[in-house]
Length: 290
Ligand code: KIV
Image 1: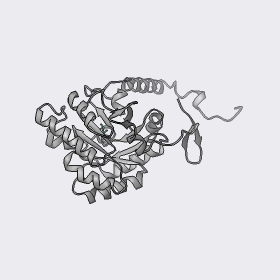
Image 2: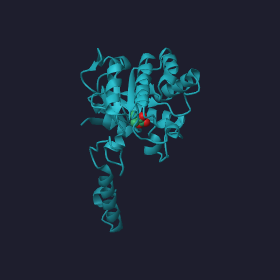
Image 3: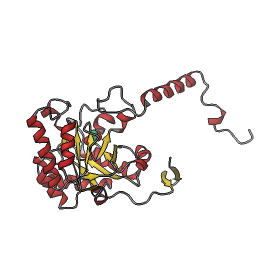
Image 4: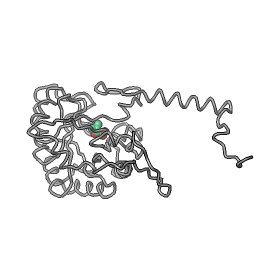
């Protein structure tokens, strides 16, 4: 566990000792050599400064996912998420991290219309948050946009397979690639995104065999979620893996049961307030020697 030194002027907590250099895009890309990644890449989502601080020492990549729409804002999908939200949460996560590379999701409607629209949105996200990369959903149709961004100083993470921003087209969040035609399309999407210059690709919610093929076919690292243990890395939504929700997708492993623990803490607090056993003298300001 890191020790933090608090700067009382800014309330900013700096880890002690300060970690070395932050992960870079070329450094991450170079983790895959001749189609193989020796040490799997560790990625988690983060939306807030404090969560970023806690996750940062353990992760190579922190993703400010547009899943914040559901997780933080209680929205029904990622579709209503805005650039304003992504910029604000991206900046918080950059402020709370020192080691991991921070990537921010481009929200629905901020990049699909044209490469120029995508560049304007990505430049805003990078300037306002300080992140080093953006992620966008889509396969072959997005390849020209990925090439355009990459050539103009915007490192891009691709996202193929189940693409949650397309929920209204897909009709739900079920696993993709069950038919041969769909499997072939996901593979060609991944190759197109990699060839366009994405330094990394997220493959989400696909049959295991497809994830393995995508990992073998793409030159850049492939990060799986609901995919395969053969991917070059793994990502999960942090609140899912911490057990903050009653229902989680089948591919999530819960590493804790924070929902229960938070409920217990809140219940104990409520009982102590009601019986006036909190606060005690220890939590009360009184004159010294009084
Ligand atoms: O928005 C998100 O959190 C994501 C991950 C699930 C990969 O895109």
